[in-house]
Amino acid sequence: MTQPSDKALVPFVSVDNMMRLVHHIGVEQMITQIAAQIEADFKRWESFDKTPRIPAHSPHGVIELMPTSDGEAYGFKYVNGHPKNTSEGLQTVTAFGLLADVYTGYPTLLTEMTLLTALRTAATSALVGRYLAPTNATTMAMIGNGAQSEFQCLAFKAMCGISTVRLYDTDPNATAKCSKNLRGKGLTVVPCTTPEEAIEGAQIVTTCTADKKYATILTDNMVGPGVHINAIGGDCPGKTELHRDILLRSDIFVEYPEQTRIEGEIQALDEDHPVTEMWQVINGTAKGRVDDRQITLFDSVGFAIEDFSALRYVKQAIEGTGFFEPLDMLADPDDPRDLFGMLMRAG
Image (cartoon, rainbow, N blue to C red; front, side, top):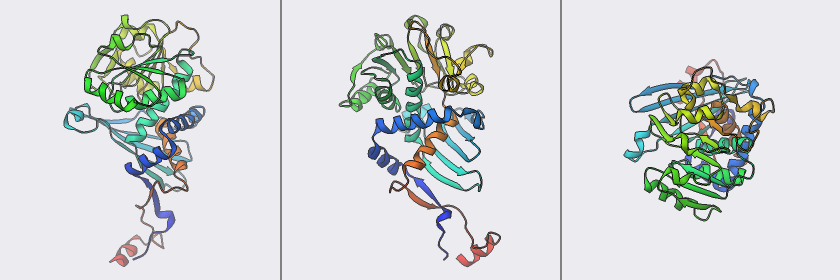
């Protein structure tokens, strides 16, 4: 049987190899490096194809495709969001992604993205925090202590200098899990029994809940001046975390308005309510935080360019390592017109 050529072998990063890669680099270091890639790509935002992600909704959850291209590389992520999965012993979010060469159309990377999405989401949050959070913030409230919570806490520690995290979840077991996982990671961890207790003294409030419903995780009276809110749990129509009055008092920053108005907190506002796109803040054409009393809100739903950045980062990071497997997934006949002949010779 004809052996596939090197050009027909696609690097594949399994869950096991992704974990090995993270341990090789270090969680905080990898988050910081992914954030640098995201920042660089946000600075060239206008070079990307942009489209809201393509959803398939069901009563059980949502399955989405998130594609983009910068003209040289093409990337997409397949991702689901099924909040009911946790009660069945399954992940709420799973994902995989692909990177391809625009010139040939050939895939150049296939990778798990369940872990990678948690890393890039944390990287995006902390990157935005650098631009919007109060100067010298030391304390973050982490409301929602599920699968992404530890990544968020470590990202804000590594990139924004947070030293204390105050944890709250409706499920005390989730808070206990998060507290245990953060032990020895250089943070003061304060488990809390109410969201009101969690936000005491916090300059940054991160909300990351999973229920697919209009919810009020934060009420208007809970948010004082000068706070930065990192709202990352809203990710589909019919799902919010914040009382509408908080939005009316905040300066709102988003990734891609066309997508956020469908899926984010701002779906509760009029379509013409002003928002600022983060890429403009990052490239210096729009203002972020301008004073100490300003309430800044990052209404994050995740966008394909962030996944593209993470895919490009992984492709570079695995070069010269053993943290991938060459995958035979492309037919490669000696004569590109003789696909049938290749099939017959294999018999």
